[in-house]
Length: 190
Image 1 (tube, rainbow, N blue to C red):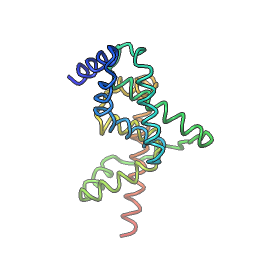
Image 2 (image 1 turned 90 degrees about the vertical axis):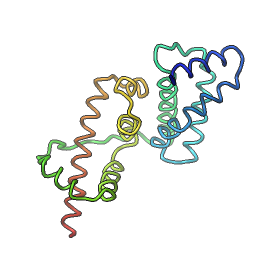
Image 3 (image 1 turned 180 degrees about the vertical axis):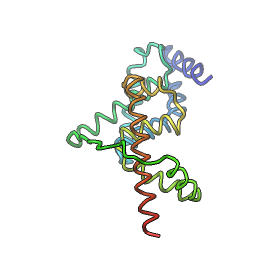
């Protein structure tokens, strides 16, 4: 339904009713801002980059081929704009992931997590997620919070579907290891 509504708005914009673009902005502004904020990590920059993404989408609307959903196309523009902004601000960072295959018994982790109340679980998970790079946090957000399928995440990020799957697998492991460290520190401090 949303895709049909988006296509109707696009047709109106292409027919000269530029005010119809405001409906697209209103429909997608929250997720565009969320994607951008995760990457640029600054509210003012995120507002600027989100606005730039919408301007770019408006300017390039005629090139939208409708072989994907409009939202996927728009989120890809926002993602690329945010990445470009961060590349201009800081040197390229490289993270080396050492030994993600630590032997952590999943049953032990499940017991430790289930032993926490909901607020403690949320806090531990939040701490683990903060250790991820912004680009990795986006993958987690798009998949788990927004419920987007791998194919759409691939379209937004420009990564192949298999690359998204591999990165998601590695991220789950990394979060698992981080949670284990957080819970170990918490148990040790008691």
